[in-house]
Length: 86
Image (cartoon, rainbow, N blue to C red; front, top):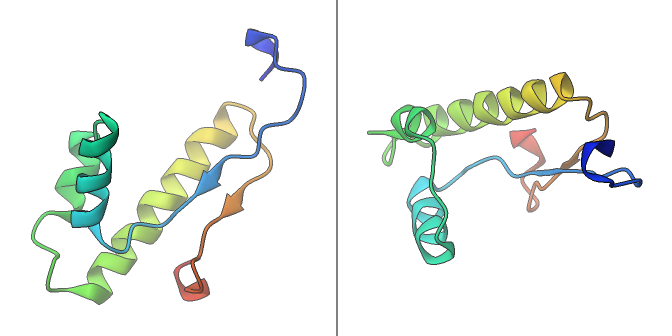
């Protein structure tokens, strides 16, 4: 965290993906890209909400794991009133 001169703790927000089509649309509008590996995990799950939620939980858990390796210790989970996802 301090490598770039930031001296306060940053708390990343983790939002489990419940609607991948929306995520793709949002990313496109923002000029962002979605990693191919993440997109592949959600491929074909539009009509399988239970499986999609499990994949969303795994993707979020992987994000936390990667961030912890980088020294992040605090997280904020955006549940949007869907606490079952976290």
